[in-house]
Amino acid sequence: MKSALKPANEAERIRRLYELDILDTLEEQAYDDLTFLASSICNTPIALVSLVDHERQWFKSHHGLDATETPREVAFCAHAILGDEVFVVEDPAMDERFHDNPLATGAPHVKFYAGAPLIMDDSIKVGTLCVIANEPRSITVEQEQALEALARQVVSQLELRLKIRELETLDKSKDEFISSVSHELRTPLTSINASLSLLANNKAGKLESGQHKMVEIAVRNSDRLLGIVNDILDLAQLEAGKLGIDRHSYNLISLLEDAVELNRPYCLQCDCRIVLEYDPVDATRWINCDENRLLQVLTNLITNAAKFSRDADRIEVRLIVDGDSARIEVTDHGHGIPVDQQKYVFERFKQIGLPVNRKMPGTGLGLRISKQLIELQGGTIGFDSVPGERTTFYIVLPLLQATKEQAVNSGMS
Image (cartoon, rainbow, N blue to C red; front, side, top):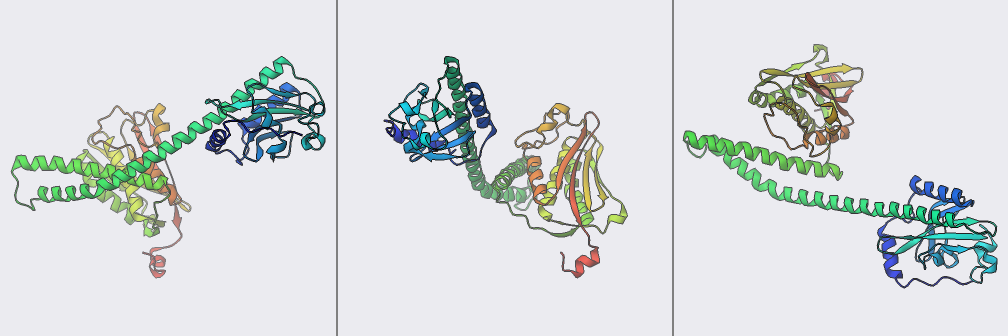
């Protein structure tokens, strides 16, 4: 038996193989489909996607074979990666390199081998797509061409894997950069915002009418910019799994009343009014939630409804209790969400283009953040929209089975 020599570019080849981050990963249907096709076309019981590592060959797909790897020193594939063409051994017993190879003399009894090298776009060969039979035979020109074509498809899968990893790395770097910049912006913005608020409230001396209007414009834009920064930071923490949820027990109606009152001035700015509707029997309902985060979500839903409501219309915040669940609805009677855009509603940085009076600008992050915040608290969020009539966003959360007195007695806040 003669083991294969190492390729001249072995160090670069191994580095390229490791960049794929594919060794010892789970089986994937895409690769299994290709080995199935190779086996069928070449009429062999075994077909493998073999990746040649330092000391072993590892099989990403192993059709007709239980083993997932063998030592490199006995690998037929280690010979196949030394050339660019399909490497064929019609009868290992007649070849001095393989006549006493343990893979030929024992299981899996390789009596025929044909391997097409997996040639990456930089000409580096990381392994093979090979077929194996248990008796000596030959391969037709058409079968050889088909094997090469299927090997190119394996390479396409590998290169797609690389591109996905590159995009994931880029996306992570972008998120880290945005998060870092946002952290740096929040402190000075908070300071600017506070100073402008003092000016607007005449705490630093009375302003003339023109000056006051200019300060009000600056306050509005400072508020908006600080909101964008906070949204970006929340999203970065949520998607990194670093945002903590501090859950306690709260009376649901009290929480909804707070949300309505907090956002009533904003609704007035948007020339609409807000009403809270619920059955009085549900006044003692309690939920376990992060109060601040739930108020954040409700604020987002209410302000969105206000932005897209018609002038002089009303927004309805409604509680519906169904068994052990509370469904909180926020409805506006605006133009609704176009059917072809509804699938984008919870995507980040996606603002739905609507033919309405958009009274206040947004960031396209609020609904994405809201969805993740609600799911972290064991709830669900969704919407129903009838274009031209209305849109209802809803939250469904589990209820606590405790009355107000029971909650106070048990120490719930």
